[in-house]
Structures are given as structure tokens and as C-alpha cells.
Length: 416
Image (cartoon, rainbow, N blue to C red; front, side, top):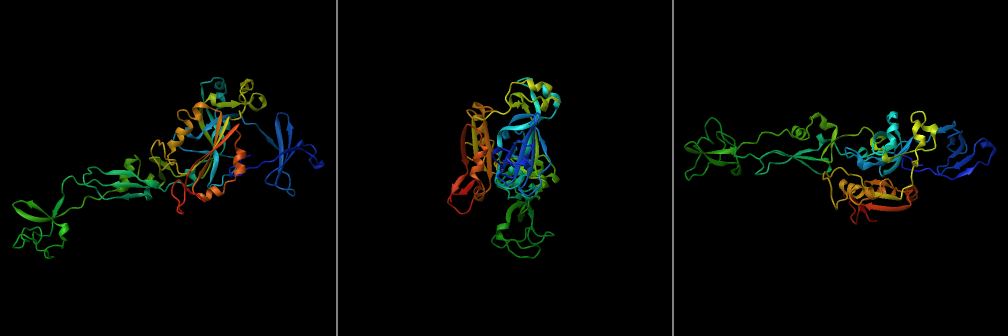
């Protein structure tokens, strides 16, 4: 069994051998040191568990077969979020994140009245995927937009204020450059600078402080004013309210910039938790499988499901282990044919033309490993990763770049 904490518990089922377990049929010595006893009660399975040989047995629990199995694909999220199914239990909330991003998962109908629609091959129903899910953004989100706004200098020829997306969730505001020179007289009261009387005998200005402040030659420009030549300094452009500019560009309020981050060129609310229980989605009925021989499981809400010939959970033809960089949201481009930091690269790979999603619909599974640094790779346990892959064919794909430099960059891991 996959655990949301990143581990796995496994063990071999054997017949009970001691009088202590009388009334139970099977026993399992688990890899975590615990022990499990099992027996059948009608259509259900009873189990009891203890942590070690000295702990007390738990109260017997009645297991229940999942109502449905539905094909989950993280790339189908309408907002572009990438939730990986970690398993069951409490998530550790740290990297590496290892979970299923495509494959058959236990599920249930959100609305039990939809059971009649499952007979149709083209109907849409609302289902709830069961288990613990985690999005890398929830574990390591970008900073709030309000802390990442920077203002650059105006560039000649720039007639409008621009809001530019930068790396790491930063936003750059470039003020508009004045289309015509904005000049103002220097000095005060018509004396000294700006009065037309501050010229030397050879047409050169007399730089002094009487009648006004001193200005360096580079700050003084000459422009005709009336019938005389006077000196002026450029007026500063009006101040830019950078936060308001950014809020207007995203069509939101200044206040919302405090709890939102830049996500794929848009705004996404900062997470409150690092994982969530269950995810709902609208699915076509051809991506749903349910028990054909368990009327006691479904008869209460779905009495007609027991006659379906569909298998409960088919074994996938192909299992893929995909190792990729955790930050899939900083690159706002929709696609790329070379950058493994671009999420569209993986969407095309798994669901684009001639992909497994098109050629092997429902016959594959993908387990994704999201990493943030080289140290995350050392935390992986190959035996556990291999045991997760249940397909007839198995392959591993690595989408991080090896580097000989000690300093790691986005998408890079050390060769050693």
C-alpha cells in the first residue's frame, strides 16, 4: 500500500499458524514491523492490526471495496494545477513528491443519482477521486505578488506603461517614457537661472547658486522660451503606483496581491495546506470502471451496477516513472519542444498527437517524481519506486539536466 508520507507498506499473505489468531484466516508480517490479520465476512473483509509484537490489537475493521475506479489524469485540471495522488494518510509536505499523475484510482459518485448514466458510453458524471493529493505549488509556492513588484526606468520610445512577467514570480513595471520633453524653469522669482539674465559674455551659463539651486551641466537643457533663451531642467515624470498597475493588469485589486502568486502568467491563491483529501472532476463514463460482482457494495445507491460486465481495475499495459523539476508554473508559455521547465512540454508528451494518451487510452499509468534539488534524488528508494509500477511494460523517463557545477540552477542536478 502506498502511503501519502512517501513510503510503502507491504508483506506476504500466509495462513494463520497460532492459536492466538483463531477465527482469522490469513496473517501478514508487514515491512514496517507491524502485523495484520484478515478474514472474510460475507462480501466484506475484516482486518485487525498491531504496530509490533507487544502492542495491543486494534478493533476489527470492515474493509469496503471502492465504489468505482476512474482514470485520473493530472493534465486534465481546468486551471492547470498538477495534483499527484500520493496514496492514503497524511502527506509529509516535502520534496521529493512521488505520486500517480495518470492511472486508475478509487473513486465514488458525487451524486448517487447518476448511477443510471453510467450505462451510457458518452455521458458525463461527477466523480470524486479518493486519497491524498499534492501539488508542488502547494509545497513550495512563489512569493506573494505584492512582495515581488519592481519598477524599472522608462525607456526612450516607450509610450505606455508595461507590466512584464519575470522569473521566479517577479513582476516588472516599466513606466511610459514622455512622448515630448517635459521642461521647467530653474530658479525662483524670475531671478538667476531661468530669468534669461544668467548668461556670460560668450553665451555660456554662469553656474552659481544665487536665485536657485545649483544644477550640473548634464541636468540643464536650453530651449527657446518666448523671445529669449533660458535654461530649464527636465521635470520628473509623475510617480507610478506600481501595485495598482499590476492589479489592473491582472484585473484584480491591490489587496488580492497579498495572498496571490504568479502562476503560469495568471494569479493563483497561495495555499493554506500542503495537501488535500479527495478531488472532484467531471469524467466521461468510458473512463470509469466498477465492480461487476459486488451487489452489496453498490446496491444501496446503485442497484443496476452489479450487472455491468466491465472489469474493476485493468492492469496497465505500460507504467512510466517520470522524474521532473518541481516548478512547472514559472514558464508562462503554452508549449515548448525543448525546455523541460515548460509544462506544455509534458502535456504534449503524454497527451499530444501520437502520445500514449492517444494511442493507449486507459492502458497506461504515470508516476511522477517532482524534485527541487540533487539531494531529493538521494531520498528516493528504487525498490519502492519499482514496486509501484504494475504495468506489463515499465520505463523510466528523466527530465532534469545533469551539471558538473556545484551551484544548481533551475532544472539542473549534480552529476555526482
